[in-house]
Length: 189
Image (tube, rainbow, N blue to C red; front, side, top):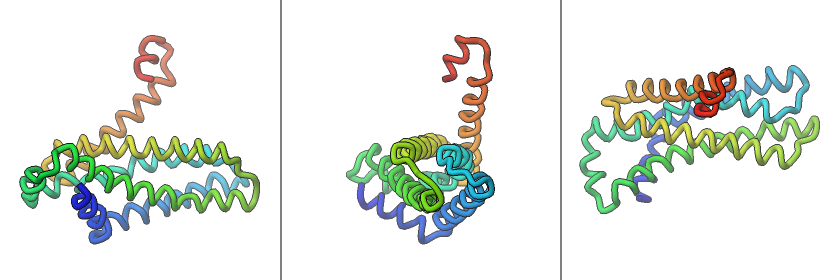
């Protein structure tokens, strides 16, 4: 399991995928921070993190699109799935590799928290709950995206299908908050 994790984790940095994901995510999150916090002189960390959720929804398929599809295209999936590690261990190792990239990226966004702390007050409870919620939501998007990309034949269709699944979840959440039919809103929530 560790070998598969190491292989997939290092593959993010041997190819541009990891750099592109982290670069685009941190650039766009910096822009969001500038527009929502710095221009308005706001220290609202939770609003900033809620805006980043949309960014994760858009970019998380980049992390999962290659995990299964690339092995299938190179035909190394037969070798990996017949290894002594079980199928669950293989999938978990691939998920943990993507989760570590997401965790590193989320930890790097704490620079914005330091900027808020320099100009105002950051409450530890708000910071902890906000980042915990954001990280768990990001990891759930990764889990869904990995599941969806397992059914794709190539990386691009996997990424598009994962983005579609994320979009459906986002629309279901928006629909649930705007519905007046109680039983349907409860089912979507």
